[in-house]
Amino acid sequence: MSSYNAPFEIHVHGDIPLRADVGFAQIQDALKPLWKYAGAKSLADASESAYEEEPGIRFDATEHLLTLCWTIPGNDDFRQALDEMCMNLNELAAQGAALEITFYDTEFDEEEEPPETQARDDFVMLFVGPTPAAIMQVQRDLLVEDVVHLMERHFDGAELGGVVTEIDRLFSQRFDELVSSLELGKPPRGSGGGSGGSHGGGRRPRHLH
Image (spheres, one colour):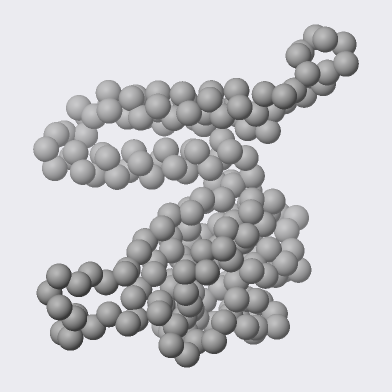
């Protein structure tokens, strides 16, 4: 879309570990929703951020790491491009990863707006990964980090083992529910005609204490 009069500056930030067999052509195809939104003809044309101090979109072929620190003018419809990109990156990711998306309201002027008026700033966390379990692992790790950081203001870290255990229990329950939903519609195991293959959820997220 045109950058003129765009109501938001949108910042995309995150590091995504990719499989060792993934090359630049696959990355360019996966990120096509972003560079097409930017009005570019290729990923290389759109890889630079709107701000010079930001590295933009970079791929480290040695580390197999895709790094995004990239700002673009846009609108709410950019969320659709993000959803499509995440679906594409799921196919390339080596493990779960988080993306931080920040929408800055460019039309809000704090000095000119009435006191009760709020900026339309928004912050979104998106997740990619090769399996639902890998994605849940990242979500779980971020939640534990946030909760422990908050509660360590009041409690010693050694006292928080029970809190972490409860978070693990909740994620295990969610994972089991996901597995059950994936199993629906499959032929019963042992029926002779059904496959006994593994479900799409992969292994259960590990519990780190």
